[in-house]
Length: 68
Image (cartoon, rainbow, N blue to C red; front, side):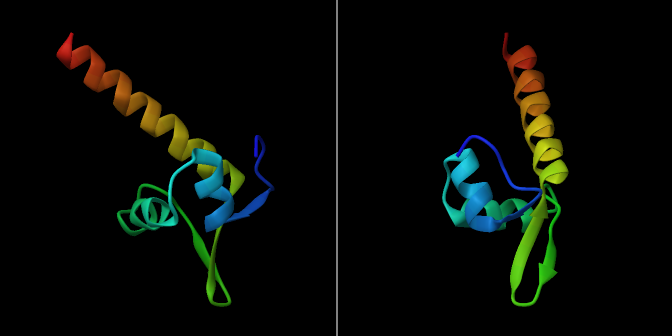
């Protein structure tokens, strides 16, 4: 999957990042990834996924600068 739908499920986001569902749930639980509940399931807006991805990249860049 290269592109996310406008409103994604946890499975969609996990597939996009190539991680397990548990990793996505952890990111939501810690507040790093926004989500909302729709019925019994969590949904994530594409914009929130892109914000999360940008924050993860920025964090990795900061850590790389501290090390080297």
